[in-house]
Image 1 (cartoon, helix red, strand yellow):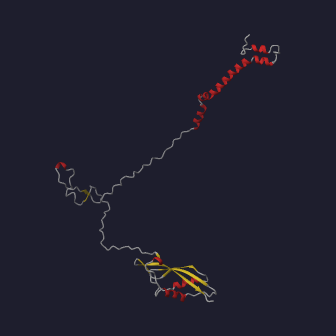
Image 2 (cartoon, rainbow, N blue to C red):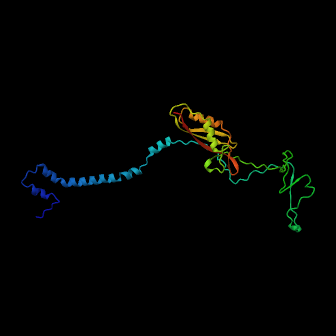
Image 3 (cartoon, rainbow, N blue to C red):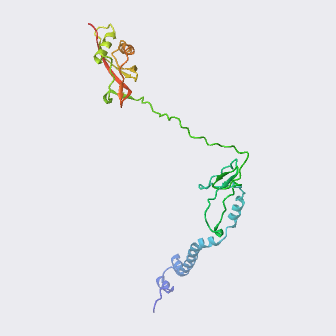
Length: 267
């Protein structure tokens, strides 16, 4: 006997002589129907799951469109007038008309009668009128302008004064004290009053400007040793006689000068 395992004949052979009331026999007997039913249901569920997005996309959503239509409101806005752009190459406005009528001057040219395009003005038309490159109707209320003649007086040359302060190292003619620098040092030594302080020793460094007239200005103390030594140096230089000023390019100029003063008090 040929046995077909697809059909339930094999169940009778397996459960021959056994208790068929047992649940295992009934389960195996209905297994084919259960498998087919599960396969059909699974296929339907799978098909619905795959086709669900496509079905949802085809359904029109009228509710959202109505909500958006309620929220969107159209408002009319009045735009400002468009500004007219000024062209960069716009020609300037024409000049005001002159006080006296102006007649265009046409240069006489020898030509045939049929070639004449513009006749020159008559002598009567030029009476009490100006001659120009074009014909302009005058304005009797216009202001009459008169060309002033160019003067023939002497032309004054403007020379800029040199007020720069030069250094003695680069000057052509250095400033000098009357009688020489030895007399200047002697003048300072004779007029400088050393403070009465025991053991006072050091140098006072002073700078000043010899002006174009020989006077000393802008006197500054760069360093002193205290006890009024710097102020005393300024006092002496202020009473100094005028110097011979320095020169540069043949002209008198201002020159900066420096002076060290050695102080040695009596012990």
